[in-house]
Length: 209
Length: 136
Image (cartoon, rainbow over the protein chains, first blue to last red):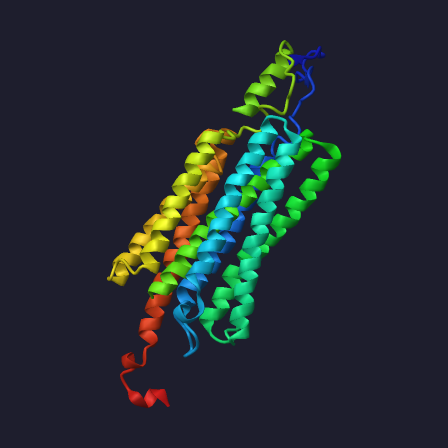
């Protein structure tokens, strides 16, 4: 790589690179995105801690068994789980260079995400309609912040996915688009991991409490 | 894997890779089979805790809570391995290092918050106030 330059006597030897130092494009994008996901994980950890501390403070208001509908949660969990594997199929088609297959699987993933988001918003609407608003009790404040932050993440995931659909349709599966699909894949599966925590801690343990 | 190997091939100049993107990311993307295994496992690991709660299978709330939490933890690991393709080698082990650090911080934040606030609640209970006059 480096070779010694001719130097005058007594001077320190100088080095220079014969071959330009080369980094693969997007070489550090994935690890950087992973670090972002880990920091996002800490946000959710603090929200889970808040819910764990305040989740039992109903202030004589409605408690989980009055509010939650486990059938609805089961359906939205199923939609998110299915969207994880359809995103996996999009990744496999992308690796094989199938543009149409990638787009179709991404569209299905986005629709499943929209189903999940719709069910969450329906639940929120239903709860607010019954008077179970965030300012009713500490439990409801913690619930709306935790589940709402997750729903906000899914919303931005869907926006990102629609953007990617446009970019792939316009430019095809170029390296820049591939790295975007890979980053969204991490984001999407990460949201699924967070949802496992949400349905376990908030919904299932809430019904047991 | 990627950083050093791709650098070496570029330096030697003997091997021009047709697609530099192919092994530039250091991630194992899995196969259709691993995705299906992960999906099957996560369906099972989701269905059982939902069934336990909806059918009221375990009478003892404490045991039921612990069982459900155990299923959740196992499912999180299934997702990390089969969907997020976590292993000790990707990015030279740095993804794993970051994840372990995050898990340590999460454990400290969660257990610390619950522990401190539980004791705070216990000590704030009116029953602990020795002199009822203090309540006024």
